Every structure is written in structure tokens, then in C-alpha cells.
Length: 81
Image (cartoon, rainbow, N blue to C red; front, side):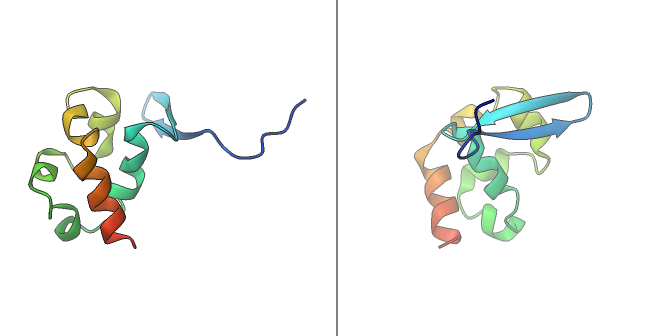
């Protein structure tokens, strides 16, 4: 059996299902976003539209226009540097 050198995805266990999020996916930033205090996460106005519970964001494409925006990633990087 071949050993992996590093993980290629995040495994998210949700009620009733398991989702695999590739590390190169825009949704991989959600783990960082949801660890931020609300006051910091909402510094970028479109973040107000994201529910504070990640299940809906992970299950549907409804919020992809926010998560896939470069400002979403930039906001997360700036706050955590």
C-alpha cells in the first residue's frame, strides 16, 4: 500500500454525510473563516451573507460567489498573518 506524503483534502463529517474538500478548492478556506471571531470575519461586507454554520455553505453552491471571490481568501490571509 502506498503511503501519502501529505493530505490532499479535508474530510468534513456532517450529520448524515461526509464531504471531502480538496485543499486546492476555494471551500478549503472555510475552515479558517469559521475559526475567526465574527467581528473579524465580517470586515468584508459579503461575509455578512454567509451563515455562521458551515453546513449549508458546504452542501450547496448558493454561496460559491462569495467563497470563490479572491477577497474572501485575502481577508482570511490578512487577518491570520
